[in-house]
Image (tube, each protein chain N blue to C red):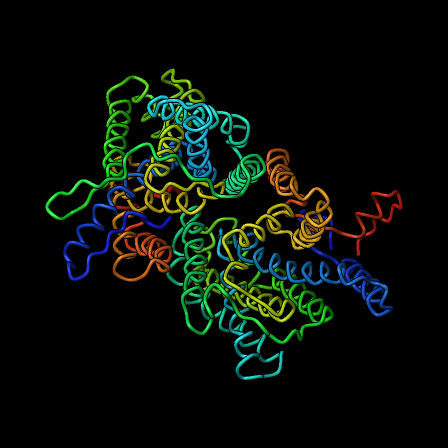
Length: 305
Length: 320
């Protein structure tokens, strides 16, 4: 994903810097949306859901077909691009992960990798591996704010991401279902003794995470208008890095991690070179894991003997 | 072997079986009856066996979940290829030096990262593999995404077989030694083995470096077999492929790794006629396999020729 909106101005170094921060925030809000799904799923069943990046890709494709083939308005397309991935996320959990809930974690991880490969290859079969142009629904005309250009798609992406995250926060913190989710992530057995249907809560977690990833897929189509079946691999891994960075299992942590990730990437692209971007993301991960494995906002878990 | 030992270890028959298998394949090779296409597959199978068995040493025997094996393979491949191209040293020296550099890198990376556990270690090693790939993409000497061409194609299939054989013998013997027991005890319970006085950090790094050494060797063989390498040969997917071989065979089972590697090297080729559905089938099989037999084909058991005889009703339950 190369930032297309990168605007270079000769001699205005500070302007370029701030410009990259704007780009980074837009990219970071997409990472944050994907990272939320990783962090919620990891928080509740301790699984790195490798298929999550592919759910995000499917979101982009659902959005694409809704906007082009069926000519639906943007709001409806976004809703569909959240609903279909949500259902798919629940299906994947039911079919592939639930039977393995007591299995060693490596078996579940391999299954997740298998699911990811399956989705990618089916997508290449159905949608063809060639990139497609995502329809331009918003005018590309940038808004000028004292020398800094913010494109309209970037503003829309940022606002949508903030609304979705606020909605998620409300759901998790203020509703009964959210309370149940937090309880299950703390202690599954105790939660089930309190009368919480664990399977339902886990399904719901997958649905929520996948819906956010689907929304992120549409968002990315809005900013970088090229989509293809393997587009989810790298952002998926990086969003996971973002989740670890912010503290896995922590919802505000995933948002913070996503933003840091987006900012670091766009600054590295501008200041060093775009080819080093991927290495920076993973170096950041290794440093974080070595210095503070619980992440910025994560709580430490004591090892039980 | 006595009846008390529940977990079966590879026996003398296994060696005999392997020797016979290699002998018959080689007879075919020497007679020149084997088409080049099959020769190619055979070469890849050999390289994959080295990779899978060495990853099994890290993942299956020591229980440290590594997802960066392709990174070590890349280091071995690039170092040995550069030596062959620029210094024109003999193949064996180039291969060994590539493997040593990979092992040193294994120690440098292993020392800090092996403090991590489970999923965190997996994701850190994944990141390490990706960093190696990006570095290769950006260095002058590795020619970036275009890759290295005109590497002397000096590897023969016999050499690949020999190295694969040495890897297997080394790993099997290691498993039976004091050091191997230490590695196994770390897999079973790290805290308990530490309490028994085993230097877990040393052994974890040792397993990591040894695995990296053989992966580097496999990378060198790969470079000199193909004559061309590029960073895209060593992507994250490559690590996953090796991991799938190990897991399908059964973590900790050397013969399992070998059997799974041979199946998984031949299967995609056999499915080539429906190339469109090939990867879909492959991933589908992977999921089904994990759902119905999460411990892999062999579990931690080893394939024994005696058991195969018994399976076909030849009796022969005597202990050797």
